[in-house]
Length: 206
Image (cartoon, rainbow, N blue to C red; front, side):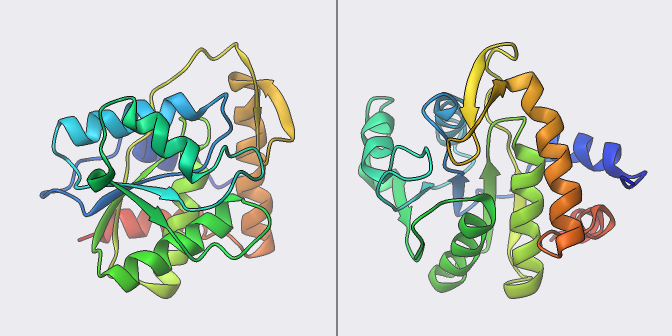
């Protein structure tokens, strides 16, 4: 049964407050080409408003529907974002990408670089689970890391797209149910912190 506090968490993740200072980076979760414009637009907004110093991308070859670091780097160049503002998150030793693999690599990369604050960016339908997953890993491995949620720009909700390792197909609106179900299943599996734990993190962040 879903936590009665899940609606509160969803609102807070999708409408998070801004940090008191510029963050060290903004991580763009790997997406299929269908959804990548959502996180690209958010990256441009964060850099233009000087809310973050750089955007972080998964540093991998194309896999699991993600077009790959070089393709995304070139796409961001097309938006006027230069190499000095783009950094690849290394340490993804896998032949596939999924949210937990990315979150683990991101938190470990941030710890090695000494980054203390990051935005987490994913399309709105994916944002709650993406943010919860990074918080889950950070609480365990790097509790000093201050994480802030910045959802990607909303794209047409009734457009059919491919998502989730390039295997799940549906409208963006239809994908919401699957994301909420994954939150339940992954929490029961032990891969995701509880709704209550993530709310506690937000209440005590910084």
